[in-house]
Image (cartoon, rainbow, N blue to C red; front, side, top):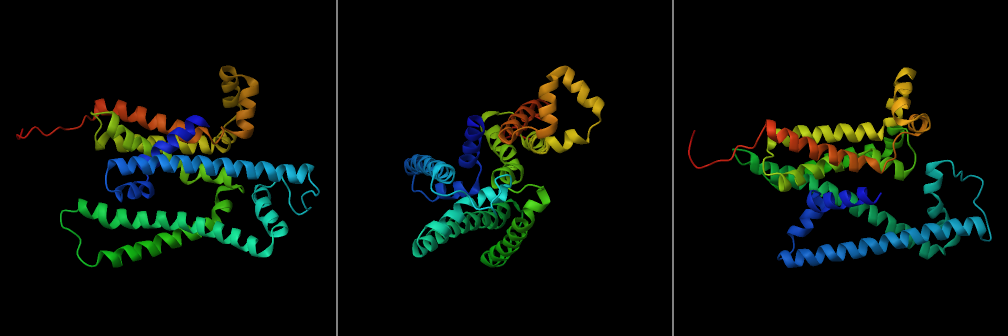
Length: 286
């Protein structure tokens, strides 16, 4: 979990447009550093508060004056995710409860609109600069159209996400969906900073290799259960019978998704750089 968290943080501060655009708005590198330190301190504080709230709710409903209602089944991920909203709605005074729910919705909207805005900015500004002929027309109007399209896709995906993935709790859905892209995306940027030989022809295949590894780890249980029993027996001879059985029944843990995909993408980029080395311009034509 620690290694996965480190890679996720590196990716968020090196490749995530939602974060980078905030750094670009600072006046200099020193201000960006202060912003980073502030972000780390605030994030750690929020994580601690969330952990304390979760532990407090567990204690309240297991050792406190009341237990969970019958309609909340702890075997269901959706029901587990609903414990905090249920406590707020049933035990917090109406005015304060409404403020808490409003804050939750505002935080969710803030995250969503930041991502949608990043999509629109990258599509209209960054990719627009790559064209030989600068795009004509009103870029603001183009950005609004892209925002509308991305917003609709995000909304529809969110509604049907649990049905598509076959999962029902947030902690399982997030790593196995868009977090599968994090390792490859971070490796794409880190390879450019760490490996001088890496060029476009090497890093893009490596990014897709990392994505394939992420999806393989994320859905390892489904993939293993599709294999023949003879394959399971061969795995048991190498990994051990008990470990193989747990792997087939439960799959690999979600904390391995980002780590394994990042390592696979970085390693592939380094190896492919010897096959497709970057072409360094020397100022003269060959």
